[in-house]
Image (cartoon, rainbow, N blue to C red; front, side):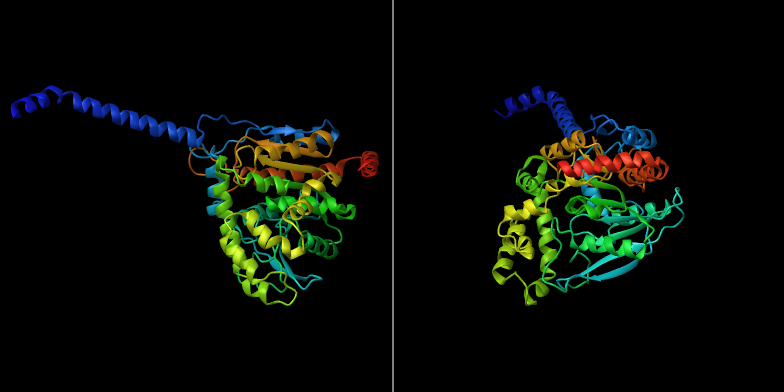
Length: 433
C-alpha cells in the first residue's frame, strides 16, 4: 500500500508545480483585474462636458477659459477613481498646503450667535486693476483652516483677489457657541452677515461668490433669496453640491458607490462636532434641544437621522421634509441672474447622477448658467498629476480663478449698450419668475 502511494506521488509530482503556477497566475490575473476595475484605469480622459446656451458671454468664456475645453488629466495610477480622489481630499486636502495670513472677524448675530470669518488681503493687483473680493463658503463642517481652502485662498490672493472665508457656525475648534444653534444645510444668515461686512468695509469692491459642496448650496440659495443679494456680485461658482437635500439624503441611504458607507462616516463626524458643543446646546435658555434629542443623536447612523433629531430643530422646522425643502437651493437658484458656473464630477460618490439633472436643466433654460461636468475628480478632489504624485494646485483651484478672471475682464470691457441689454433680460426674467 505504501509503495502504491509513493508511486502515485511520483506519477503526479511533476504536474503539481505546474498546477500551482496556474493557480498563482489566476490569482495575479484576478488581482490585476480588480485593481484595473477599482482604479478605473481603462477610463479615458476628456474635457469637461459643458451645458450652456449660445450667448456672447458663453462664447467669450469658451475662448477665454482653456480649462473649459481642455481635457482634465488626473494622476494616472489612482486619479481616475472617484473614491480615491474623495478619500485623499478628505485625508490631506491638498499637497504642500500654504499658510495664508488673515485676520479673523467676529460678527454678532440678532439671535445671539457669533459668526466668524477670516479676511485675507490680495498679494498683488488684479489683472483688471479693480478691487475684487472672493466671498467663500466651505463644505460641511469646514472653515478657513482646512487645507483645500488655504490652498485655494493662497492661489486667489496671488492672482489679485481679496478673500473672505466663512467659518461655519460651530465648526472652528476651541470656539464656543454663544447661541443654541450650529450651521445647517441651507442657513444663509452667517454668510449674509459676512457679505454685508465686506460690502460696507470695502465700498469699491466687486464680489465673486464661491461655494464648495454644502457651501455651494448656501451661496446659490443666498443669491436667489433676495434680488438685492446679487448687488455688486460679478459671478457665482458652485462646486460639487447636490442641489436638492431631500433627494440627496434619499440617495445617501443606497449602497451603490458605497454612499451608505460615506453617509455613516459623515454622520459620525457630524455627531462628534455636535457633541463637542453639548453644553452650549443644552445649557442656553432658548435651546430647542433636549436630552432626548441627544439620546437619539448617539444612536444615529445617518445624516438624515441627525438632521431629524437635531439640525431641523435649530430653526424650528416641524418636519424633516420641511427642513430639506426650505434649505435646498433648488427652490431659489432660478432667481440668480448673475453669471453662474455649476461644477460637478461624474464619479463623485457623494452626489448621485440623478441630482445632476437639476444643473443640466438649469443651464439649458437660463442663458447666465454654465454647467461643467468632469469625467473624474471625485468629491472636491480634482487632483492633477502625471503618474503617482499630484500637483500642489488642483484643476478646480485653477479653473475657478480662470473663470472669474474672464468674468472680471468681460464686465470691465463690455460696452454699455450690452449691459443695458442684460439688465433688460434680468427685468424680464424677474417678471416671469
